[in-house]
Amino acid sequence: MHLLRPTRRKISTTVLFISIGFVFSVVSDLTSKAYKEYVKNTHFEGQLLEDYENIIKQGPLTPAVPDNRIYELVKKIPPEAHKKVELAGLFNIWFTVIFGLLITYLGACVAHRESKSRDAT
Image 1: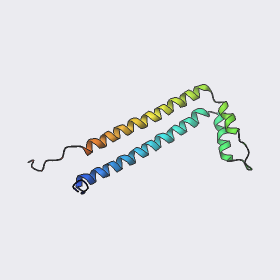
Image 2: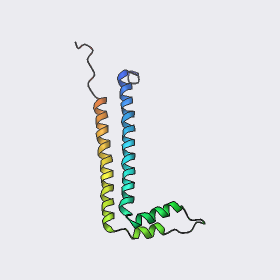
Image 3: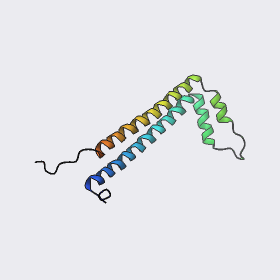
Image 4: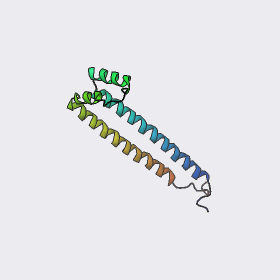
């Protein structure tokens, strides 16, 4: 039962992993929100952005009918905007993966650090 016996080191490592998980989820959420905002601003520039915001403000149609307003706006998006959004999506994915690996490695380094010798003077 030595494995499950709580020690100061195990508790501090647990707190560290919980903190790492929290930081990772916050950073992931922030990059996701930034990506969504970038997509909106890149796809819908100028008049397209105003039209998009007006459609969103109006909400769903009542009674429910097929709504092609957003689809019609998307057809007007220039190909360069699609390429920019694709690159931003790749950046978002790779940033999340690399940040996750780095923060996990940091946690593993702390979890597997050498224990302090009690005999040291």
